[in-house]
Amino acid sequence: MSFLGLLNSGLDAVQARLAWVATDAVDWKLYLQVCSWSVCLFESYLLLRQFPLYSKTEPPPVLADHFKPETFKKSQAYGRDKARFSLISGLYKQVVDSLFLQYGLMAWSWQTGGKLIALLGYGPEYEILQSIAFAFTLFFVSSLPSLPVSWYQTFVLEEKHGFNKMTVKLFITDLIKSWVVGFAIGAPFLAGFLSVFKWAGNRFVPWLMAFLLIFQLSMVVLYPTVIQPLFNKLSPLPAGELRSRIEELAAKLKFPLKHLYEIDGSKRSSHSNAYFFGLPGHKHIVIFDTLIKQSKPEEVEAVLAHELGHWYYMHPTQLLLLSQVHIFTILALFPAFLHAPPLLRAFDFPPAVAAKPPTIVAFLLYQMLLAPLEAVVSITMNAVSRKFEYQADQFACELQRKLGDEKMADMGDRLARALVTLHVENLSTVWVDWLYSAYHHSHPTLTERLRALEGYKGAVAAASKKEL
Image (cartoon, rainbow, N blue to C red):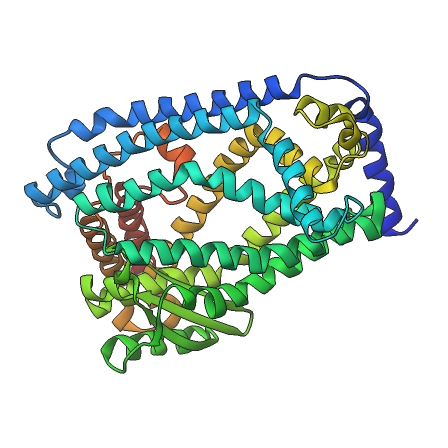
């Protein structure tokens, strides 16, 4: 039997076990309300665990020499305000989502989508067209309650602590641009997504995975080269010490650097970052102008050494493979929900629509039902990401031995100084509850990373002595 034959047989066995979904009346709305409120209340509990730590008056001992009393006080105040904002906005969002769910926003959006395409002379037989109208109606209506929250976060919270650089005009233009870009990309993506279902029937899983993988790889290229320039200016990094350091490091590691950019992150915020993107053999590095202003060239080089560690150990590729396993698991279970009239009836869809469930509606409802499991997946992915961060830090510390370059001997110290500077300049929280961090953070805390860096530097020094 061919691979596809074995795959389809396995998927058929899964669907046979889930056949009850298409026949049994289950109160899916109640299930979703309970699950979504459970996740929300758990996240609120985590915030309440974290909140007392903002009352501490001194940083951890390892950071005592790096945080001036006034800076630490500002950091604590910023963290406290962000935690309070997250708690209130999280509960607000949950109440809004719960009301939308209870009163049938999704069913209303499907009917509204049908009315919109009827104005253009199309009927319900044009399911893909109605699905696009439905998706953007649902997105637009559900995003409206979040606008005041976003406004407050930008112009009150971030403004209060000196990070906001955005004007009202820029806020509005960014919002309009994001909607236009969302439609320009979302409409053809959704059309392609639904066309795979129509073409492949119940054997859609491998073909839809291929479609999604192609889309993911396309966005790796399109986002930084086409989409991001609509919001930020990417300029070649000027010639000088920093550019020379990065190009020399990339050449020694055989990193396929094609372009080295500086991005005007200060246009919107004082926060800083650096990253690389691109397909194999064609990579680009982007450095925020705020990072360049806040750190010395040798420290920015250390940050990039960490980023190149991710490339060296193929972390992006590993995360892509993990995402494919995740997507396969989701798609493998979906056929049971694809033709399930009781599912749509539970969410207030008329009998005529529920009798032949639209693919996009069934998929969105299915995704909503998976939300509690996705929270568990998120914790697992955070753990994997933190492991990768440690490996990238270790890579930076070991560059001297890997490259035989004495100028790299202090790379671990430089990275430590850069991390401290980033946390000081961004007023990042340095006292973090372990459970809150495990759930929310994809990176280890600063104290954890500094402790690990000391261990890596000690191991490198010991190995160097043995070689002598």
